[in-house]
Length: 263
Image (cartoon, rainbow, N blue to C red; front, side, top):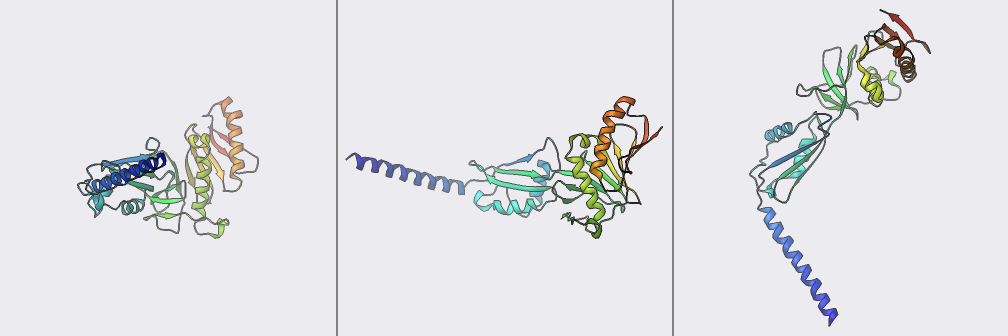
């Protein structure tokens, strides 16, 4: 008898759940989308995209959202549409129980702004995505300028492709610069110290620091890690003792040598 009661109890619970889910499903289909909530990940660190940008994108989309029944709104289509935007890495779109449309936006993380020799400007993010310049975004990322020529369309979203042998690639100069930018970005000291990379007509690099009135002559791309190590040691043992504004130029071009030009 107890066994029959136990089975009947579970059947009752199961029937209740089925009816509840059915009722909730019908109610959800009739729910109207009355609010759009946007959350941009890491918005305190970067503002490559803002909630207002997202709302503008939805306004331009040929799909009614606000005031429409939830059942008529394709969240997968919205995700695909938003992921095609230059400044968005990934999007998650879903409805809450009360019918609010929630958008979770993972924005791109630019680590380099490039101003090439044609005067075109664009960003490259930490994954190598090339993002056209937007006047709506201002970030204190590393800037590269000078004799930089690329063989891709700056005006559209693309990905930087750098083979191991960069000298045989048409984009070798921007690949070298991007490699330097990643190295600087991944080191907290250099990220806070190096403000700009300039590539001259000899294919050599000059670095402009944030602190100190000197110019750093890095030379070519070869052995750049060792050159940065030597420069860090010189900063600790040299500039900290004599002052950061004593020199006009710090030359790292030559192996295991640092040649300084005084003011």
